Length: 254
Image (tube, rainbow, N blue to C red; front, side, top):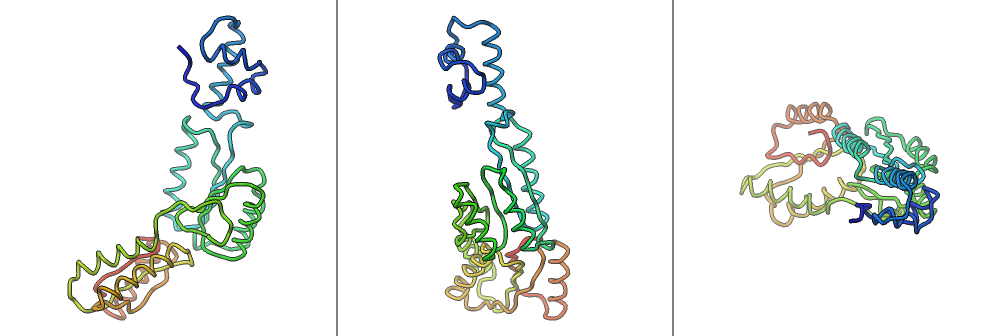
């Protein structure tokens, strides 16, 4: 019975071990004609490849994220979990930046010093200079994935995330149905110029305009994606204007 060597190629194992492909094939399929020493060495290489220990084989991926603390923490925990396991054959590195500390120049500097990485995963607000830097990386043949919030003008490889306009529309339906025919204002909480927030806002406004004309977006307040900032600004709004009928927090910091 053969070994469970997943999808690692015989050629790759042969290159790493120094043995011929025929010898590797015998070991992987449990056939005779290979010494114990050779078999042990080949199986050790196989194990290293499966665990992603062999740095030449493992792909290095940079995750560069600018967001609020709760999103950054969730992403960091996920990265650490992946790096501590044996299932994936790549190494994740992280650059996590708090939204309140974000500077375009520093973010671009990180991107421009990503030569050692095979691919990038990006979370950040939309900016033309950042788009240009990502385009340069993508033009080198490196995959660049935008996560949660898209940068469609950056020549990125693809976007991974939900349909943000539909998310905003769903929020409007939930608030509208809950309030029934009450007349009043809705408060929106926003933060940085992330495309995901802009698209959520468009979806939200569209549904209110078409189906819930009794509800008006009276004002939007700005936060830095932190719970403390959201609490302070919403409290100040209520003090000055009274409580709104509903709040749609498009930003982080719940």
